[in-house]
Image 1 (spheres, protein in one colour):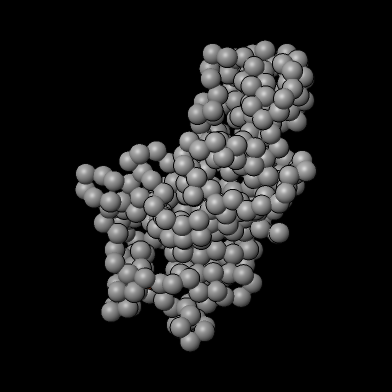
Image 2 (cartoon, helix red, strand yellow; image 1 turned 90 degrees about the vertical axis):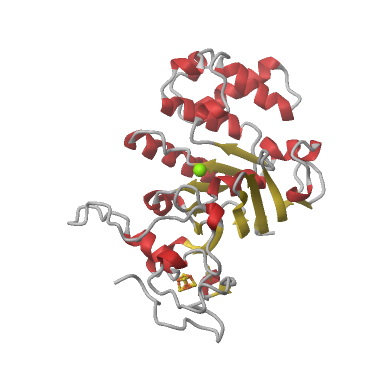
Amino acid sequence: HDVLLEVKGLRTHFSTDTGEVRAVDGVDLAIRRGRTLCVVGESGCGKSVTARSILQLVEPPGRVVGGQVLLHRDGRGGEPAETVDLAALGTRDRRIRQVRGRDIAMIFQEPMASLSLVHRIGNQIGEAIRVHNPVSRKEARRLGIALLAQVGIPGPERLVDAYPFQMSGGMRQRVMIAMALSCEPALLIADEPTTALDVTTQAQILDLLAELQETRGMAMMFITHDMGVVTEIADDVAVMYLGSLVEKGPVDDVFHAPRHPYTRALLESVPRMGGARRARLPAIRGSVPDPARRPSGCVFRDRCDHAMPGRCDVTVPPPVALEDGRQVRCLLYGGDGGPARGVQGPPA
Ligand code: SF4
Ligand code: MG
């Protein structure tokens, strides 16, 4: 099986005092073994909620209300290969706890979401190792030091006894990555892990993740709002807007010839390095609507220059398969098979 994780029709809602907010509204994704999928979109578009929904980490008032999250296990350690629907498991189910950290690990923007300030990092990594592996404390410590070395911690024999509060943000992020890798997950979900770091550290952590992903043959789902990061590390990209996935496909294809008007606008807003367009251009007019007041029809229609009255405000665009495994949700495409109104090709 080339595909490790399939998300089908995922819907996650939050009950609020203004009504039901559809934070994730019918998302389909596939993550291939050993590949990196970047999920990109503006803040609040549902990227993080999608990631948390995969691992059943959504807390009330949010809940996964529909869809499937199919994990295709390849049967390591003599176990049979099997497919598990994670969306069918409860948030505290024994089986989902097994999946977390063993099949799928997650790292966050803020390393302190997974680290305790007041415990030595060696003990924390050791505990993470011992959750799924029956090894002695001494052996866990040895494995922890090896992991710290792998994630580029200088002098790991000494730093294994340090506390997180003694470390820089970049070093803490490396420790969090070491902890995530401790059980050799088949998939690492990284939710904006470099966003809080300075530019140099950000580049180092990205390089590290790309290297670990490659040498371990691990799949990665990388969540970011930064198109630059996507070009650095993605094999595939999925573009989200207001809880919907509007376009996905191989990153080179999507970035060379974005099809969805939102993808095109996002790419136009990226500053060109070294050119006159250094400043971030306001390429997308208007702002993201309140998720509690989703527009009818196409979620992007209030901001779309191609919106067709009588169509885009009425019909929810179905996913349309284009060339190269590309998929787009926009009424300009499909129906009679191809793009209807010549928005093909890169932005002018
Ligand atoms: Fe624009 Fe209509 Fe396509 Fe939505 S469906 S992106 S409003 S053209
Ligand atoms: Mg987020």
